[in-house]
Length: 292
Image (tube, rainbow, N blue to C red; front, side, top):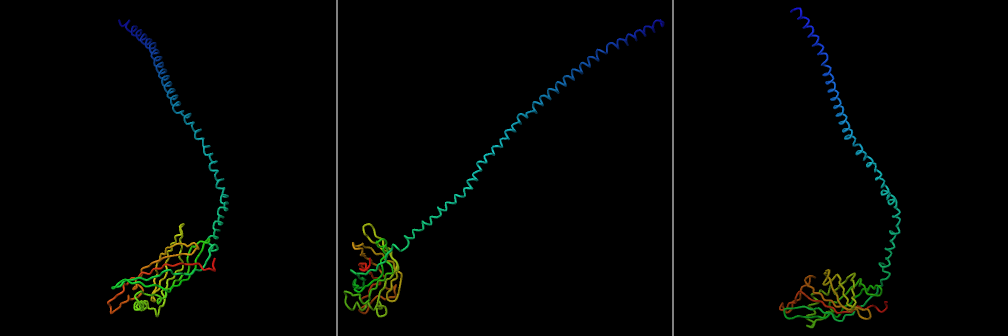
């Protein structure tokens, strides 16, 4: 038995070795095929991913809108800046001819008193009165001695102003209807011994004449009575006569105490004169005959 046992073992060993040598190659090939296939899959996958990344990363054609940035030629509207040529049109300042309307100031001929003419006038009183009140009755005195001087200013032969005028009333030319007793009290009140005249003077009065020949004159002047002076405003109204003379009327209320005058008292104080008097004039200003 031992005689056949060793050959059997040897035979089985050889067979098993041979079998083992023949079988593995198929497995190796399979593994290699599997590895090859997996490698191919990996390569395909990597290739695909690379292609995708190339496609994705290659949006450089989208980046190629850099030519859109190249429209920097839009800055070429430098021709718009060329209005520097407009600035160069500083010759626009050359219309110094426009500045030369200094000729516009040439109407100095209008301002120049060349077109103004001055002519003297005389004052003719039609009626002048001083009225007042007393504890007995109202009273009225006539102004019988009045004179005036000054000049008319004519523009294009039209009366425009009265200048440097002075009107004087002689205090003792005031006559009352109440008789000499009243007159003496009046002269005493006006301090006629020291101040014989009532004077109103002004330097300029503008004359306004409407189309209907209605004349208005507003003036501020100095009124002096009994040695005291005050600025007094007067408004005169009237008409322009056909010969160019003026007929005017003016009325003004005055308080005697404003001029340091004491209202007269008569008959031991039984008759007292009111403080306020009203001076009224109706007169003509006539151009002197020897003037144009």
